[in-house]
Structures are given as C-alpha cells and as structure tokens.
Image (cartoon, rainbow, N blue to C red):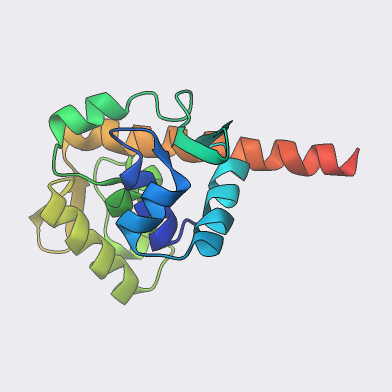
Length: 168
C-alpha cells in the first residue's frame, strides 16, 4: 500500500477537524468525483471514518489509526502527514526505526531515490548524517517512525481483512 500525494493531502485536511467532502474538495481545489474515489480508498485502508449526515458525508481521521498523532505533532509541529506518508518514505522510516545507523547500500531503493527521501527527512529534522554517507534517525524522531509504522500496519491489516471477507 502506497499513498499518493493527493491522498496524503486529504489526510492533512482532516488532522485538526472533521470536514464534509465539499469542504475538502474546495480546500484542495479538486472535483468531487475524484475526491470521492480517494476518500473511498482511504476508508478501505481504515485511515478515515465516513459518516453520512443528511445529504452530505462527514469525513474524519479514524481515532484508532491515528493514536499517537498528538505526540508526533507536539515534537514536530511543522510536520504534515503528506511529508511522511507519501511514496517510499513510510517504508524507509519503518526500516530505519530499528537501525542504529545505515548507509545507502542498506536500503532496497535506487541511490537517487534514497538520497532524495533522506534529504527531505533531514530537512524535517527526522534523520541526521553524522558522517558523510552514514545516516541515523534522531532520538526524538524515533516515535515518528513508530507512529508511521503503526498506521501502515493498521492500514495493511484493514486491507487484508477486506480481501479475506471477499474470499469467504
């Protein structure tokens, strides 16, 4: 499961509050059918809750999936979900959570992709480079990697649950 940049932007809109599909579409300047497709996919992964109120749908982050977000936001207030949940970044964060230090060869990504992601994580203050070519997750950022891992584990299990129900 990889989230697109747009799906992560939808999650960013829902961090502070619940919102209707119309409000999210207006904030992200996207068409309602496209947003509906993204919201269904995020609901399929168990990342958001969708409730119907009258003729409109109200969307919010699923509390069970986002347990720990307040801790992450208190230590890294500038951090957006789109910074850590798009592309290969969550997989990289999950991998480096348990590592004391690592080099680019340890990663199962192309060097260019690894450098791009690690440069962004360095700008966010999650990863440091104590020596040239050696990377390390900062101590205070380990819970960011743990949070990311937990959210993706829940999303994968929700996706698997739906597939198992489909097979039954």
